Each structure stands twice: as C-alpha cells, then as structure tokens.
Length: 284
Ligand code: ADP
Ligand code: MG
Image (tube, rainbow, N blue to C red; front, side):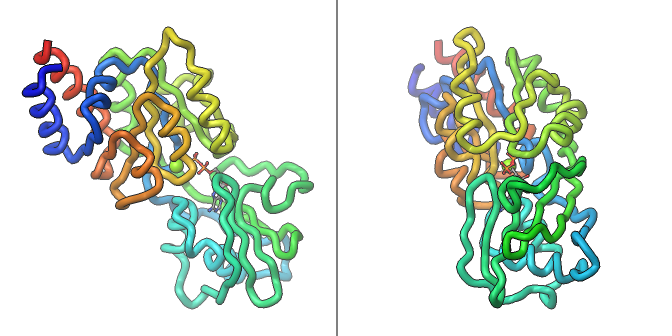
C-alpha cells in the first residue's frame, strides 16, 4: 500500500490505543475471514469473582482451602490466579516454596511439608471421578489427595455481543471460541456472545489451540486470534494476525502478538478492522 496511507493508518491505530507492530499486519487485518477468541479474560471480564469455596470434607476449613490455593497462585499471571489472590485476605496467605506452573493446567507449590496442587481436575487428581461443576473452577489437592475446589463467576464483557455482531457486519465469515475451560461454561458464554455452538472449542490445551487455528480451511482464511494470557501466546503466533488484550501491561501474550490493544475494551477489534479497511481503500 502507499506509504502515506500506511503511516496515517498506523497513527490512527495508535490514537485508538492499538499498537500495530508492522504494516503487513495492518494490510492483513483488512481481509480477515475468521476471528478466533480466547474466552477467559478476552470475551469475559479480566477479573473473575470468587463464588463458592468447597472443601472435600470437614477436616479442612474454607479459609484454609482458599489460603492454600491463593498462596501457590501468587506468582501466576493467569487470570484465575490473579482474581483469587486479589480477593483473598493477606492474613490467609502462607509461605510457599518450589512454585511451578504448567501452562494451561495449573500450579504446584510446597507449604510446610505438604505438596499443594491447584488447577484443572485432570491436573491435580487425574483419577478423580468427574465432578458436576458447571462454572469456571480450580481444584486443589494436598499430597495428591483431592481437597476441594473453588468456583468463580466468569462474566461476559458488556461490549462482547456488539463486538461480535459488528465483526460479522464487517465481513468476518467465521467466529470461533478457543478455551481451556470446560464445555458447559464455554457454551453459556458463547450463546450470550452470539457465537454458534458448533464454533465453540472447549477443554483445549495450548497445543490444541494452535491446532484449531491451523485447521481453519483455506476458504475461511486469513485468521486472526485474540487472547490475553500466557497460554494464548502460541496460538497468537499461529494465527495470521495475533491480537493481544494488553491492558494489564507487557505480558507473554503481547510479546507474541502482531497487535496489542492497550485498553480494556474488546470493541477495539472493530476499530482496528475498520481502520485497516479504510487504509487499504485509500491506498489503492
Ligand atoms: P482460557 O483459554 O479460557 O483462557 P485457560 O486455557 O487459560 O483458559 O485455562 C484453562 C483452565 O486451566 C482453567 O479454567 C483452569 O482450570 C486451569 N488453569 C490454567 N492455569 C491455571 C492456574 N494458574 N491456576 C489454576 N488453574 C489454572
Ligand atoms: Mg484467557
């Protein structure tokens, strides 16, 4: 495209708090046919609200369960972790050592002589029978023994539904949800967002998010992926245009992205598409 138009397009992006790392990205964005979205923190608000704290039995108090989970989550940037830690009184926090995070699965750490695991049920206690939990949740095991779980309210962003509808009017043919959360939660959010059930991909590990992007058929390409977390970094790189919600500052997601939205507002993707289309039109 003509250099003058590109410069003006780029500066229009930056006035809208959108960082575009290259002119090629701006060009590609004008023709995107598939938009893939991460759920937690992207289609939904970037803070979850603690709902219920459920110890496995009476030997463990709710405070102790919350304290253990929040303590091992203190260094994680996952939105579940930050929401839990920010909403746990400091007095419940314990000393933890040997913290290790497995991306898209959970965290382990040691409190006194106990090994604490927090994350997906399959991660903390692979042999546990499936639990009927219909909300976003983390599970806790102490020395590999299931100790309970904490549920969260994952609320759709106020701007999500109109953003999706407007993307369709802007010519996007397919809107997908890619999430590590389970199907029930994913479908509920998808329905409120105006995303088809058939385009919801749930229970995905970071690798499987990449696969979902790569599997998009040629007639529905190019693909843009919008995400916010470390676990989204690989799929942002796999997409033709990777877009990070970067309001929280420099994250792994924003480093791997072609574009970063610097404000906590999903509708900026509509502005970005509109600016890129306008830029390409005046450039020819
Ligand atoms: P999404 O793709 O919707 O943003 P993620 O892939 O980040 O979701 O996470 C999927 C699931 O993995 C979460 O719902 C949670 O159960 C678990 N998980 C991942 N990281 C953590 C963590 N640091 N602490 C607890 N659970 C985690
Ligand atoms: Mg996320």
